[in-house]
Image 1 (cartoon, protein in one colour):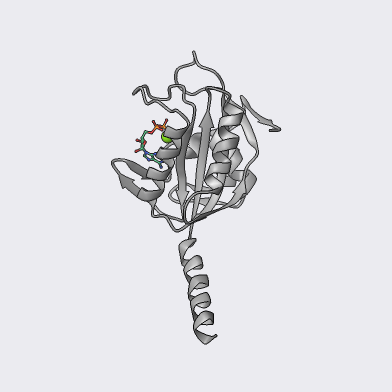
Image 2 (cartoon, rainbow, N blue to C red):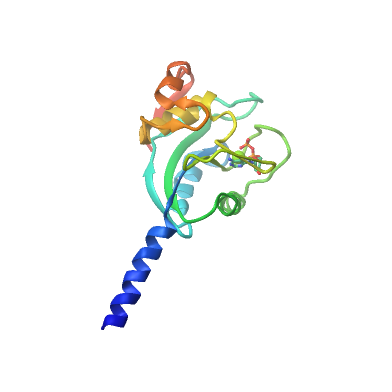
Length: 180
Ligand code: ADP
Ligand code: MG
């Protein structure tokens, strides 16, 4: 009996350790039924290994950045707690992108079935060739900041300051909240 109890206590402790990090993930899609792409990706993120989906923003429609000859985007942000280290999380997200048929054509800001970005990971600042956290440009993008603010309006963005203050300089022009 004691043994069984000890096993249980250890398992619960491990569970806590497993979900010790908080990560905000940005989702975007503008091809192939974007609302469905984003909605199903959120369901898949809920199944992510060693992770728990904590919160989901509203869905938004936004005008494309960069090349304008592409459809509008659907965007959202989720908060997960996770035991995955940043690099592992990135490769899990890239596998999900692949599953959604994303083909990388090398065009910056080109159309995509699914884009998953690690926006924030705890209060980490990371500058690796393949992984930059906080995600570059996040502090200037309405389609990231407004959904982030649905989840955690009092958020502090490492190196960039308070979300509420950033929002004062970023109008929600061209950003439309949609009901999914
Ligand atoms: P973008 O999201 O800027 O349009 P891509 O999705 O095509 O660009 O990603 C290009 C590269 O960005 C990826 O191969 C990845 O290694 C890198 N990258 C750097 N930082 C991050 C991050 N925080 N989250 C996701 N990808 C990142
Ligand atoms: Mg990306």
